[in-house]
Length: 141
Image 1 (cartoon, rainbow, N blue to C red):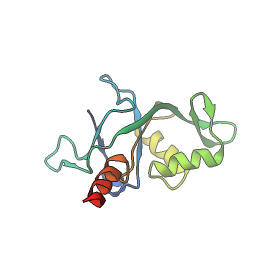
Image 2: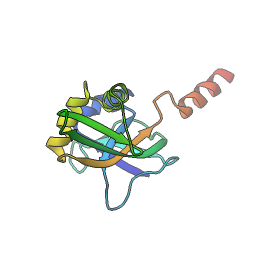
Image 3: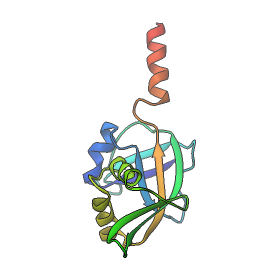
Image 4: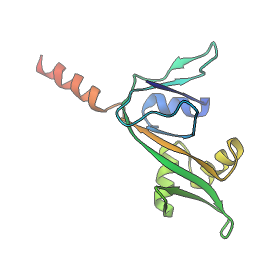
């Protein structure tokens, strides 16, 4: 299992199930792979550490690049070598807990610097397969 810790600004969204992905820089011990269980925390390595939800299944891990387009002064998002169009980039930003692509770009610029290269890690929703299995079993009783 791979553990990820979330800043306070994202913790409630992860806990409620509204955020089902994270964008992370490369790390020396690697990231999860599709099919792995993830442990999602806030405040790791502090006395306030807490688990945000039961361990979801990792659905995918994809390379992502977030950059500032000097020609247009806009944040650009590249996945799988393809530039995302405005609506695709907005969908990624919103799924990651931001109101806009520009807000996401500003966060990554302030936190990591741009261009940022990392990985988009997606996991099953709270209503994913384990929930549906438990619900099905309960209905059979």
